[in-house]
Image 1: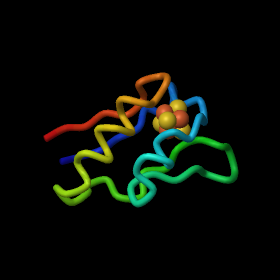
Image 2 (image 1 turned 45 degrees about the vertical axis):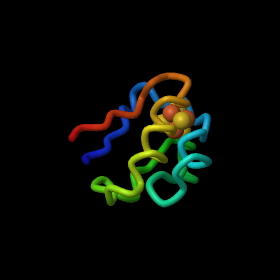
Image 3 (image 1 turned 180 degrees about the vertical axis):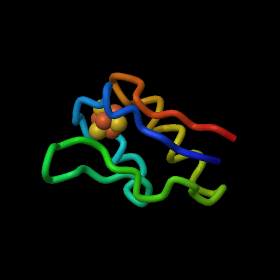
Image 4 (image 1 turned 30 degrees about the vertical axis):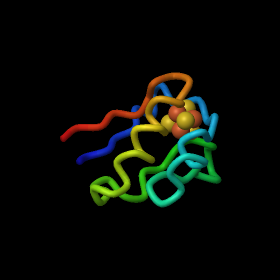
Length: 64
Ligand code: SF4
């Protein structure tokens, strides 16, 4: 699984960090998301999918 964030869309809501704190963080400098782990382990799939679903601007993409 490969995770990317479209920073052109990200609006710093932070939902992704709440859902998957091992995979996402917020950049203190600009408030936008950082992908901490672009290739998360399979057991994190549910968390990452929840983060993608709950991102208000649908900025998170998951590729298999
Ligand atoms: S939930 Fe979406 S908009 Fe909010 S910080 Fe994460 S990627 Fe950005």
